Image 1 (cartoon, one colour):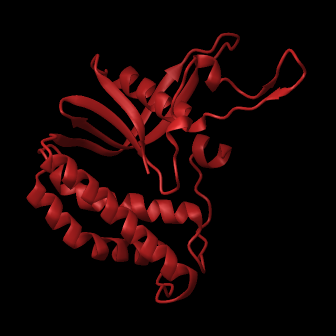
Image 2 (spheres, one colour; image 1 turned 180 degrees about the vertical axis):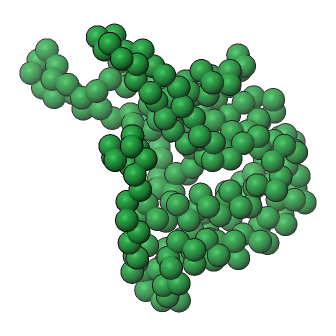
Amino acid sequence: FYYRKVLGVAEPDEVEETAAANTMGTILHDALETLYGPVKGTPLTVERLRGMRKESDWVVREAFERHMADKDFSAGKNYLVFEAVKRMAANFIEAERAQVAAGAQIVVRELDTGLSCEFSCPGLDIPVRLKGQADRIDTYNGTVRIIDYKSGRAEATELRLDTLEQIRASQVGEDGKEELFTKPKALHVLLYAYMYDATKGLPGDFTAGVIS
């Protein structure tokens, strides 16, 4: 993590025989960026989303070929992963088409946006630099949304916070029992919102969440 994220030293390329879970997510992110890139800055329409749905299977195939170095995905585990990513991309587009058809106005503002800011931490003499990559920033009926794509399942309870105490690190409680950190997804999107606000400024009305 230190070499990759702090020093910026990339890991050596390795050819995967079967798509790992993180590669599956990367392929989905890549495909959605390709599909939504041409419509940035303009309201989504039912017609445009219908066209994106027609293109999505082919776009996923191209993304799969780029990331899997021409490995065969006509059978076995790779075929199942390929079909799963196709279905996820299709479901994502169809869900937005239904929302637009029902009257929602969605405008994609940014895709795969790098975020970074300094964070002063009590007890440290040097600032901490926060860095992240927001998958998508859009407006939904005028409300800014900071969105993180997840290829795996994300439950609403993982993103709902009752108190800020829920996003503190794991620790041992007063009763001697370990209190585990169980809200990483919530902390993830909150940090994105913090970094975006620190660098570009957020309006009073915004949301940050996960689409899975």
